[in-house]
Length: 158
Image 1 (cartoon, rainbow, N blue to C red):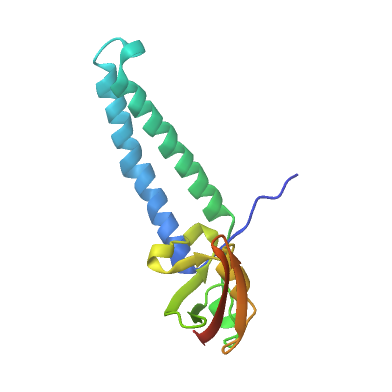
Image 2 (image 1 turned 120 degrees about the vertical axis):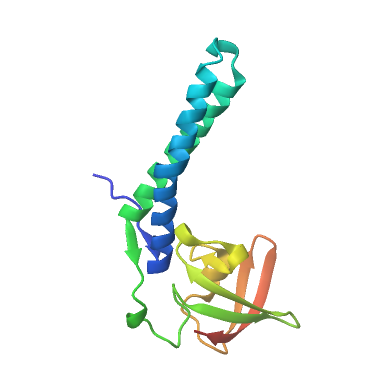
């Protein structure tokens, strides 16, 4: 038996996934079914682009529901009480400065299920997070990114 992938996440991250799943099941799914009904009423399905589009949306929504259910079922909640406050870890917010004279950047390291770089949430699987995890405040770290190597100094960990 193959074990399913585990999804480390914060409690708030799991709650967001549960809310999205509920929305997809109760609102979006019904909208798509209604679109399919309307498209069917137009007659011949072989040349009905509205029907084809609605069926594609239905497949997307059902796939997203399945993915979210799996992520929630296999979630591993990060217990913030058991964390080492001196070290960069999953669930921690880290501020670093790119050397020699870059700006400070702040990110929270989360599981891939709740990553959203625009909101400052980076996946523990990302090159930056992998380079920072296990490091301490004041450490100088070389990180290989798709854009090349970067060197940073860890300014703060919360």
